[in-house]
Length: 446
Image (cartoon, rainbow, N blue to C red; front, side):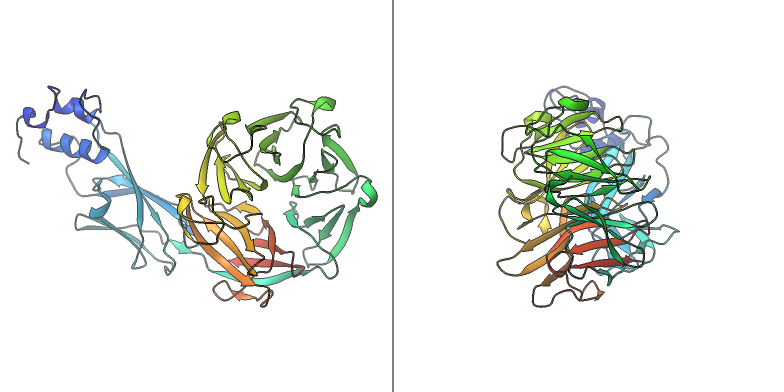
């Protein structure tokens, strides 16, 4: 490679290596420009002689719209100079990150790409500047088929959760139902007449076969033991928002509830997201008395009418806001960002805030980081399960209308009806509560 003088790569009297480090007093160079400047300034950068190499790809399984990352060396840092295919189908590259950009080291390039809708299982191939590399392990594109898991008969449920034995639980106003592995529905706890429940909305279960429900009108969180005996986990029954432990804790109108891998619970409560630790300590993660749709950290963030809530394996929290028609993401440090949704009602797919939601409700996250959201427009009898990948891209997974009810079969032709609660079972399949049809659907992913 030609070795021009370093003066060619300086601006404002700084050296090329200073530019690479991003400390120029004139401007900061984009990452790709830093890499190119480094390669031009040094004729033979250490350890970069040779062809491109892939170090890792992950995940290697997922539904269409899943975000996958590919990392390696000697990969062109400009997205347009790379092509990625899955079993021959082009997969759009959504981002490029270059790290280890220091003299004496090999820059690492990480490409993020999306599994296309028409992809099938097969090899991932990267072509970078005309050089082709094939990853030896096939990527598995999951197909999805809808079937009826349980017919609720005359019963209603709104949400669903599974214990470790694969028994499902669902709630409706003041009752909790149990659904066996064969789909048989029985009454688990009758709290009619406000004893003990007044209006429960949301349900979670833990590894000890215990069930948790938030009571919006009783201002408490209840824990129901495997035997069916309920006890108060948090909240003194007085309307308000007070953090702490024990009888001083207050909830306003707790609704959505989710559990993380460590056993902590997360609750949506009057423009806030709150946490109940395994020691029953209640803290506010984000939000305040101020209503709005404002990103920020902790109390600086604002929410509207929060409903669904879910937690991923990294501890990120996701909530659906029915008032502001969006999905928000809360990092473990309490930083809130808008993952998807323009703030205007609609059911249009798209990237991030270009997408629209009409009435986002139930939520769940799969092992690949895809967020599933139930959405509906009762005025037009339009219903859907939407997916949001890690990059914020929104795609409709299943749709339906009241006239079609619930139709089983491949997701491309299947339908849902007034979907609300969503959950993944121990079998890693997706379960949908079709409240309007009083049917729990099972989406088999394989």
